[in-house]
Image (tube, rainbow, N blue to C red; front, side, top):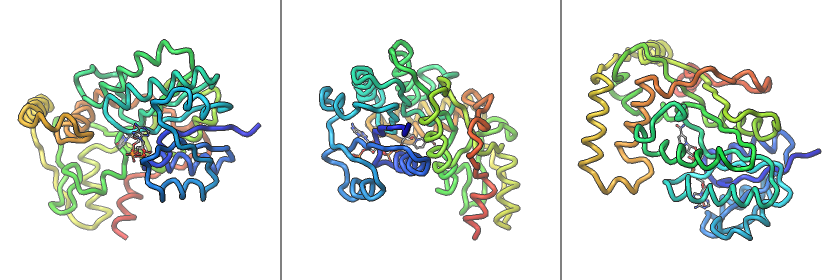
Length: 299
Ligand SMILES: NC(=O)c1ccc[n+]([C@@H]2O[C@H](COP(=O)([O-])OP(=O)(O)OC[C@H]3O[C@@H](n4cnc5c(N)ncnc54)[C@H](OP(=O)(O)O)[C@@H]3O)[C@@H](O)[C@H]2O)c1
């Protein structure tokens, strides 16, 4: 029987990749979009064979209708607490009312199940949502993938192409988890079509320490990348706190500086490390490595 998958957030960066991978795997896909979604993004979905339904996720009866007949709802929504806790809770309640048996929450992160709520604001929202989800009468699967590997291309301090440096806090041999957005999209599609998927699936397309990252960039890009020690992880936590306190207005932003530092802090302490991995669950998956990503950049 063909799986009918409903994707909330289908117009997004990751959502588009999940949709593409679902279609490649023969699923029937319905994308929930909103009246304010970009018309070209909706057209693009329709061109790819996705049935798009324009619906306000606050309108419970309309959402229940939109979810009718689905075998799974995949959330790829992005936002702060109002979306991650509020909108997703309403989406799950509608899924239950529509008789949908499975739900995939918009997690796609480092292993926030091992953290405290206060260690990362955006992960705190996910942890709060999971406290509701744990008692909801619906089967759920979280995909946890570490940092999107694509972000390494943006020229952040962790891999600074201009300064030719790799900045780190704590230990230079702390292993860090990376997965490309394409691989997360493909794996999420596999999980959506896998009725036996467990509650949590942990993946990392590649794992590299700052030490290895500097050596790899040097080798692949043909220029020497140096390691820059920035301080201990405790010093980093203190710096995050002072950046956050000094910029109260950034609390309403999705990715302010303190938030970006929190993601890195969770990685450098190793507390959100993904282990053990479920990479081999779907034989069709082919994983992109950091070496391949850098080689592509190097041309
Ligand atoms: N691990 C990592 O390094 C990493 C990095 C980035 C993101 N992520 C995660 O990946 C997931 C998806 O992120 P993304 O980058 O793909 O986000 P994105 O490109 O901003 O897309 C967000 C999607 O959510 C929809 N949306 C947001 N609020 C909504 C609402 N109230 N009602 C209905 N639709 C709403 C948007 O619809 P419109 O088109 O209408 O705006 C869009 O389709 C999130 O869980 C995010 O945290 C992880």
